[in-house]
Image 1 (cartoon, rainbow, N blue to C red):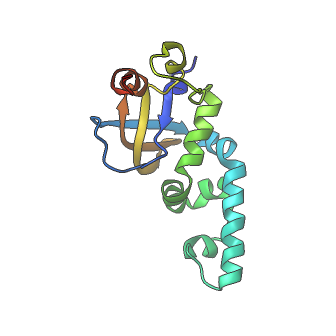
Image 2 (tube, rainbow, N blue to C red):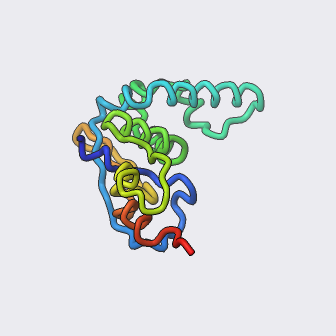
Image 3 (cartoon, one colour):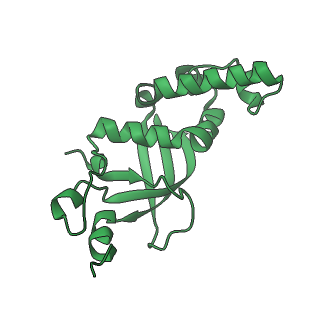
Length: 162
């Protein structure tokens, strides 16, 4: 199994304080892979922005409007700072989910207390927050903080039967 299949992303309380010890991480994704990972959600987001801008006659992302609502390939070619901001602010969940799917990640299965087999289906490193997105040497770099061993914590600190 691909190592990224053990990478998860915190959905509830993303980016908020964690009682678990946080560790820095750096994830590198080839720029050429971004379009394949994000084409559909990115294009949908762009269409929503365009429709909102027309309806409300002002833009939440004036830089995107000024750039002509480019697709992700055009953003990589000429609007990287804007793309980095958009990924960080609006699309990080979509991107991490796409990376997980491409790597063979299996979402957590239904489980009950002490079910070791089901617990093994959980992420081993969970992203708490992505803080920066940059581009260098043909790579998109994502840096932030996360925590290890979510499934171990569940097994050792979960529900206690009475």
